Length: 140
Image 1 (cartoon, rainbow, N blue to C red):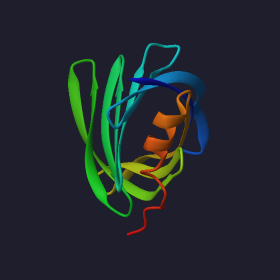
Image 2 (image 1 turned 60 degrees about the horizontal axis):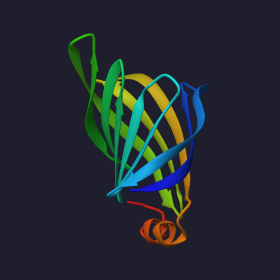
Image 3 (image 1 turned 120 degrees about the vertical axis):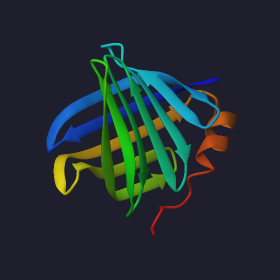
Image 4 (image 1 turned 135 degrees about the vertical axis):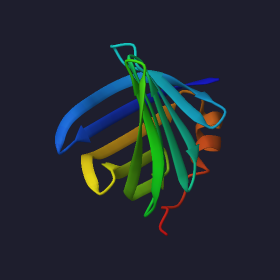
């Protein structure tokens, strides 16, 4: 596991919700970090797919694929909600990921999300190895 410097931002329905800088870890193909509220974020970096798991008081599991509809779950207060995830844009670049997606129930858009994730490793060899997998933009 190597340390990485992470910048993460998320807007929901065009309003900023999360904007943080953190030190995280590279664990296999995942970037893992936490916020000041104790939530743990795991981003499974597997182009052309991005898995997102956020654990805390609410557990969210999403899978993003550009131009596709996938399923996700939200677990809160012992109840699991299943949602569709419509990903409009998913861009993998050297040391960054940008995504735009909607959480949907049936034909109703519940929320629109815009996410930016950037990282830089303290270890040049590890950074180059991880970055080398994200040289292109995913376009279906």
